[in-house]
Length: 458
Image (cartoon, rainbow, N blue to C red; front, side, top):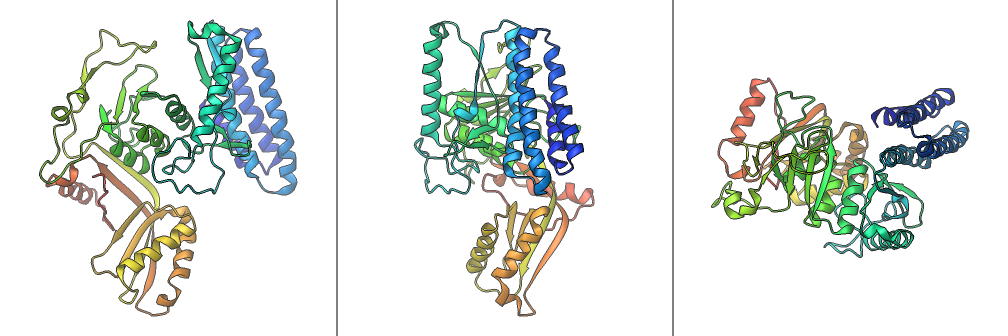
């Protein structure tokens, strides 16, 4: 619920100011209680209201300590994030119960286990016995699978009719446990990530992500009113879109699905329209640019219709054929608040050595590199980083190249106030003129291009 999330975020931002923080916390709880009272079923909602009150009291107790410490501990951030998702899940479960819909709750904190923060995985291939190496949050798959199986057998022993009468299972998103059993959060996009983790453990073939818009658009519709929904994307296209700022999903939520060969459907919760992210992929080459994917695999070109509120296809809906790509590119995304950092000079050393030291210095300080570009002269290397990390990145690079920077011809420069714009579509690299269209559009808008890079997924 957006209102609750906004109030809880404001609470964290003002947690060092006692009066303001407690007011925001009470406001968030009141919003949730108002929704519950709208169900008009006290026998269902009273227990949830009691849980909300207990959570508020627990958080207030922590805030009292924070006021003396003059710092916001990570434990408080974790607790508040977990509470917001927990309240939403409890409210949804109460609504289902008020409608006499068969349902049950899972406490994700007792099921989903992630590797301890800071632990690095050396696994290079998918292995359900170990954490995934492709995500910032690394799930412990065997432990999570065993805990889910234990929960299922316990629930079945309490109610054997579950096999004949399926239940709607409600799970609070973004919550998990670490290796020691302490609460952990799944970070940005945590609710979607919760769904993809459980889908991977359950061996699901399809994952539905329900949003408030018609799937994934060609651009952010809040910034580009002309944007329109995309019928189908390949995994590599979708992953790069999310990495480069597309607001629908966080890239970490897509990783378990991609590695498990699971189809993802991002759909509008109100009308069922949406986008399919397909696990099938056909790589392009100079000999076979922009292949007709439906000719390679006719199953890709599947006629589908939007779904109604029960998840069934509506007979009156028009048929939409997937696999019909847009000319030139499928989507445009952007990242704002970017800084461009350049290391340049004729005496920096061999290009391979410079690049290795450059990236190692940034990695050592956990700097997020958004883009990299290297000049052919071997003496200029630049990266784009979030503006908030710019000062730390420059400090790390000055330490790494301190000897070279003593020579006047070598330097590190920073350009702030930059944005990254990216376009996507598989096979784009072999289509003459795509870059020219991009350059002309930028020039027509009076925008100067400072660096350019070609992504490996085209």
